[in-house]
Image: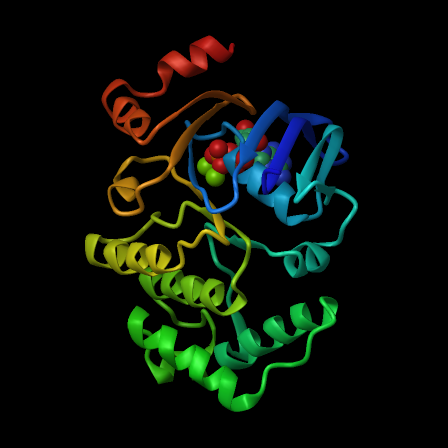
Length: 253
Ligand code: ADP
Ligand code: MG
Ligand code: MG
């Protein structure tokens, strides 16, 4: 069984009737790292939000199966407890909630929904310390409010830390590369690569090929006008870089 199966998914903006996804089909295998590329406005972020269960989108047709089970009726926290993780393109700031507290609360909330025990303090501190060291996240950053005063690169590293702590079975990274300089891009990519595992699938959404030099995908899917219009191996990303997206937007029209 595939980890994720998206079948003929049609999505509109709620109360507006604006169609964004138009019969999207996509299968992600367990342990696979899949890149989703495509022009601006093709619906990549919408797909990520619909997977995470963000309100404001209406699914009018089709289904999303995680390990064979439809997740469309589940609340975002239930989906998270089932292992779905979304790293936002534009991370939100949460003043007054220290990153450490936030991480622990998120982890324990998921464990509770799964019927597991809370993480012990020493266990949690060890988890955070091991990963934050590797990601170059300082203890001072961990004490600050979530994302408050973080640079673009620090926000992305904090997201990867979140992913390392929550250990999702499906991680969706939406334009994790946006706004990163080359050093930050390498740090973030190394963090992501360390989390690659046969037990974890990742969807890496990016407009540009650059990120895929560092996070080498198993497969590449091209989205245009709310559908997957082409799939291939990692070389497809290079071809897109050379030829641009116009051919796909024309084909999809
Ligand atoms: P991508 O991430 O590929 O750039 P998006 O999913 O952000 O694409 O957007 C797809 C299309 O849906 C765009 O035309 C965008 O303007 C539109 N869209 C996305 N969210 C909304 C919204 N909340 N209200 C109205 N239109 C939206
Ligand atoms: Mg966009
Ligand atoms: Mg987007």
